[in-house]
Image (cartoon, rainbow, N blue to C red; front, side):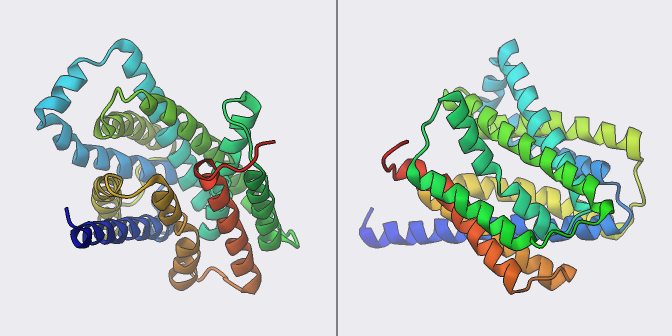
Length: 306
């Protein structure tokens, strides 16, 4: 392939990846709108990911190689995929939706951006990965950004359950990232199989829990439109596009592009949800974004380890 064609393919991949991050960022706004329309949080999340599972299922069922791979899954493989589904979808997404029903989108977004920090600290404590000077600098920068964003601290008592749910989502998301890396590290599974099976298990379990604990809520055309868009476009389609971009982009480029979600969500929440975005919040978001980006990229540009 010529240099010109290579550049065009790369530019297309970057554009598609940016589109995916934009779609994922708009999810936060749509979720907040749905939650304000009497959609129970856990049921809402369960409906989204169960429907997305059924959108992805034909990609597995209609592919001979995928069907064969499913048949060859051992009991241990099924257990691993089920655990991943419970951690990443039932716990992470369920807690995230509950937190969004209470907290501003920008606040939860900031909390979840601590995931790379938590994962890095896990790597340090388990001695699976050493910590670089750059990574410690990124952790310090992130903590500084959070302090700038939240201080002086003023928490409404009604927001405490949302903060607790946000912390659960943070820990579950970090745990699912570590476990997901383990599941995918051996190259035993095609990514579409991992996603479809784990999403089916986690999404359906979340839907059942939501219906029994919160009910179905009031679903009119607007609510179904939000759920359908989130499932089909922001989950099934976005996942497919993102995996396509990974065939062209490097891990560094993907991490940088994924990091653009932090300011995107803050700006979208300000425009469409009326959440405040003053100078202090902007500076805090910039610090957190820079810090988490450093933590994510440190392994690609190792400096002296301590």
